Amino acid sequence: MRILAVVVCLLALTGCSEPRACTLIAARAGISLAIALPSVTSAALEACWDGTCVKPSTVLSPATTNGPETCSGTGPDAVCGVPALPAPGLTGFADLTTLPAKAVTVKLTLTDAAGAVLLDETVTVTPELVHPNGEGCGGEAAQAGLEVSAAGVVTERG
Image 1 (cartoon, rainbow, N blue to C red):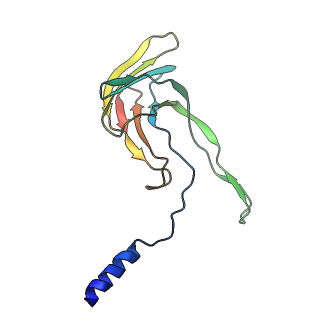
Image 2 (tube, rainbow, N blue to C red):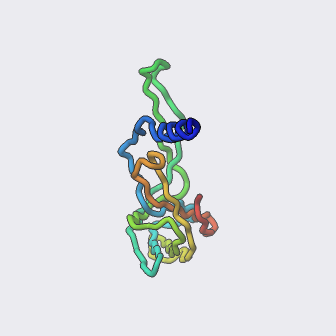
Image 3 (cartoon, one colour):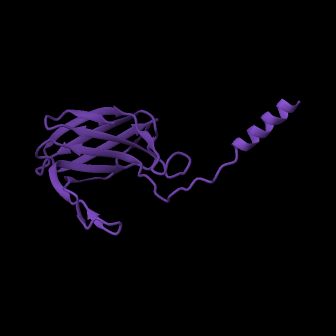
């Protein structure tokens, strides 16, 4: 009987812990693009799942990379920064608020400034839930990514 009482008390205590601190950061649901194919100026994306297709707006921007870190001092009140430097290619993000965390068929069409189609590919991606605050804190969203090489090969980014 004593052993049962001890086990019950231990089980009750395992449920006691400090509340977890969560931020108010949330993730955007959607599909990111990283494009190295030359001459691309615009992208159109269509995502389909469960018999529903969505054509979100997709704006492309010049790609950037991190520059060197600089700091104004070495103490605890020092201010540090890293500039964004131009990088080859373009990046973009297609907001898809209802994107599920399961297989999705994506048709990606890339065009040049004259409207000529440079790439028209259909691929399957599997979005994954991202948890910017950690699991159990909310703000999660399904995200996937596509990468287009300079040769026009489309792959899912992981």
